[in-house]
Length: 348
Ligand code: UT7
Image 1 (cartoon, rainbow, N blue to C red):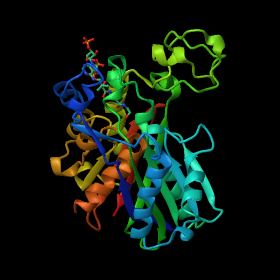
Image 2: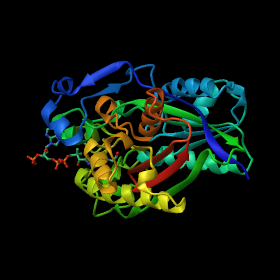
Image 3: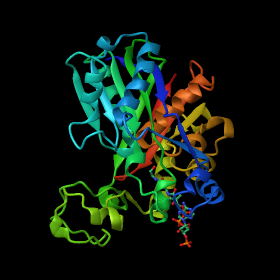
Image 4: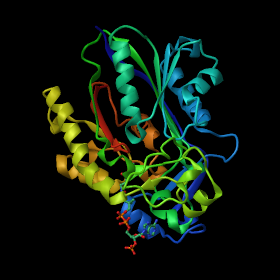
């Protein structure tokens, strides 16, 4: 049995910067409200045309592959985590395979939203540990901006999210003192509709009390109608407070689980890179775990919440800034729609 390690890492964010003040052009909001409730100052939006979740994923993947010192044709498996794929199907992994001229390798899409990258990393870890693959490309990428409600009605959701991509190459190592120590994955579908985008979907025959009032169910779940755009049901729905309350419990829980599994404590963590959901959530986790400021990395201020991309973007930025050194204990943790949550401990 091998151990797996992150051999290369890269990220890409689009050039278009939208500050909080820019958003006031579309909706009734303010820089003060957004910063106070979320910590976000600005986010990036992809070009409307020509820049997609896949193209951003490719840009991040190219850097990760180069830094891993391999070539595109060396990649033997692709895992792509996103909730905003270019098409309803097929997924982004095959589009990336085509775009990067890779061999006819396996390509898997992961739909675990904010926890997508941790789920993807965990799968890569299993394949590498068993010796099945030697170079697994793991990508987390999102183009949220195409499907947000930028009117005042959608402000509680739309101000949070941004676009971007991050990627890592996972390889085997025989050095047991370095690499991914363990990953921990969880879910609880009881509150699945509290953070969801219902359309396009096949659930039109199912009626859940928790769903908001929709017009004319007979239209069918797969159809997106003008009415759905007008009344807002076409856009992502989030019960922000319910998500917040659950997140601040599950983040520390799953971090403790990872530490316990490895006989480590919070003092051993050199850097916690939490999913960038809301700066207040990160600060809450930091306080609960008793971590110092230098033990936690946040960059939500610049990019907003980029869902499956947030951890690899933050991890890469932290690494590029010299905040991650060889031998450091890095903890990744995420919580989001599903609900799903997870953690990973890495000895860098
Ligand atoms: O990564 C995926 C997982 N997602 C999360 O982790 C998100 C977790 N939740 C949150 O981050 C927070 O719940 C939000 C940032 C989404 C919202 O913050 P909140 O403190 O829970 O605000 P709220 O939704 O309770 O709204 C408070 C007030 C409301 O006005 P009234 O009813 O008190 O008059 C909202 O209409 O703030 C209003 N509001 C806004 N005002 C200005 C909501 N959004 C905005 C806005 N600008 N963008």
